[in-house]
Image (cartoon, rainbow, N blue to C red; front, side):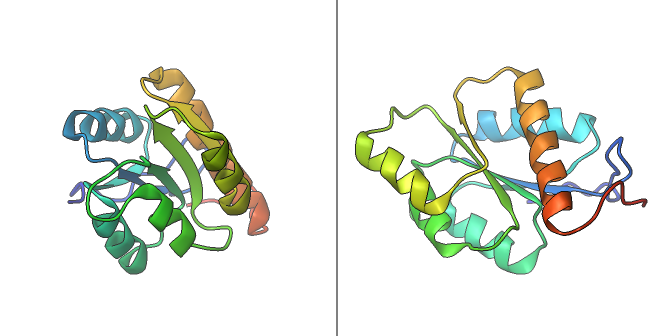
Length: 144
């Protein structure tokens, strides 16, 4: 479930852990590879139930979350977590209804990215989320 490499450091001197929760193996592996090449520690989950387990066992900085997953969906995951950590990025191919949009106002994700997404856009949003978390926790330019 987890890459076995030592905890990488981002170019900004922080160690950052990202959880990718998506039921599509190809999407999970692609995002994992993109983020690991940029220095992030990446964990993966194939459904919301696995994501909740990882969230309870690990300190996650950013959660990239698909909404439509088996067993426990992304909405349930969103409603279960609270606080500044993790910053949540919704990554979904789903068209969102007005009800969904209202739901986002309740759970306040950091960003919403449609599938497919350009790797450069994914990296930029993850970096912004890590930066926001650092500010929220009173850290700036933390050294590893």
